[in-house]
Image: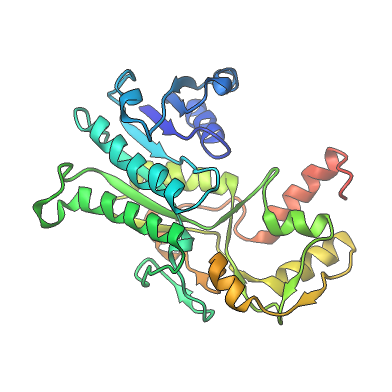
Length: 305
């Protein structure tokens, strides 16, 4: 297969490396030429364009069998999100219209679920976020789903083979916000620590993307999270025992500030992913994943440990 990875960074580069190892011809699209040597070293053909600038796409090769859009806004507010996630997808689909891929996988986020009552959420749960950035993600998802179904006859990309992955908090080498806070002594337990955390290891997200490229039906949504959501308290209790450190101090529950930041409390189910994509997790829970990360840091002689 000829595979295009849009946003060939923390996820895209190792994804491309794995696809290349499996025998696929992989192209990696980045906004900056500075990453070209890094991509080439990973066996990825570098391409240079900006999906927020449609004219830059016209000089690129086409005829890709699979396309993965895992581009990131690099932070910023709703306007940045709109440019990268909504307009970026619009521009990609317009550019791909002459030679549509067999599969297009887009990495969205579980932040589209605003549930705050500790409930289990599935792909059928309401996606009605309160933050402006997450609302843009919902718009981007709707655009792609409408492009697949030709909703109300208005989509110029009817039957476009889009698959959406709603990705939980990514951790792995150099990633994991709560873990890094714990190591540097800046972590806190909110209230009684009962708020749910949902995670996925970087390597498992790569595996899920590949499984979606191979077997997912266009027009489907999958929650890309591991098999065990964990409460904040349980997570820090395990880390404290594993590293022989004290528990982080407790602070009042987030309240209004948390709502403004989009902090939610929900348990994300990956049952649909397990059933339909048949993916076997390398790190089915946070214990397996962070045990591997702690071992890696110890081998590297990390001072934090």
